[in-house]
Length: 318
Image (tube, rainbow, N blue to C red; front, side, top):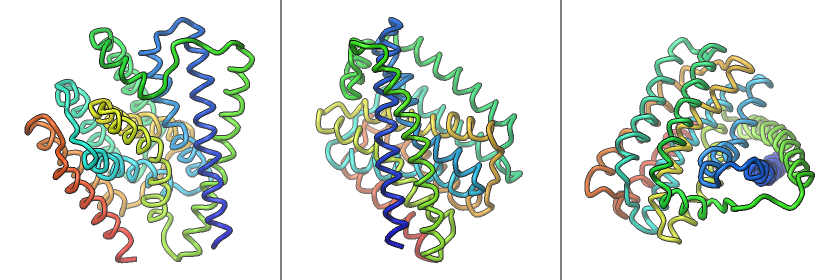
């Protein structure tokens, strides 16, 4: 089992490094094409930080482990809003902007409900993947257009995400970063999924449990790191937007592209249990956001307690 844990951790390290190389190369090329750093932060960086989840889900679906693919997405969404937001709010209260309440949260909730409706047949098909990706493109374009009115806030977001203002000195360096990033993501996802499957066998638990817990927590580390940095800089409104946006990307991008490549079989337990927990925590943060327009430290503790109880409910009965 120690070997399996080593493969899992090694895969995670290579995944995170690959994602970092991919983001840096992509950002530099985007800046070279005269795309605004603000738009780069909203698109390239947002997609790049979701790349580990995407590669893991595709690898899982292709290798006959759909529970890891679904558990990765559902578990990451629960982790983002319960664990990551909870930790951030516990460090410092998280203010909530109007647009998050009026636009981003409804899109996140709507995406979650749409996914829940579509999986009732225990399958996410090619055409449903096309629907997800189409909605993702529409949401991304809308966000870019809206960003023109929010330059100040997005400039702060670019700083938190370390989006540079100029490309690197060499285009070949950018291409090399892209190649290394894609190679790292491919290799890392393969190791990670293999380690997760073998760990499930060694522990005598289902792939769903490993996907919901170990895989989801591991792939949420970039969001956790970004949120903590934002909290330390007192820019927690950015952290809130990033977490909601990440959940939207997880559903529309990861499940969308994965199901286009290979249809995803969905376990009944995931539909009846894990998705309900995801819908519950997504809905639960709404009254927290509209009361005093912030997530308080007390509410952060409530979210953390929610996450711990959820993990107990997953692991406890096994």
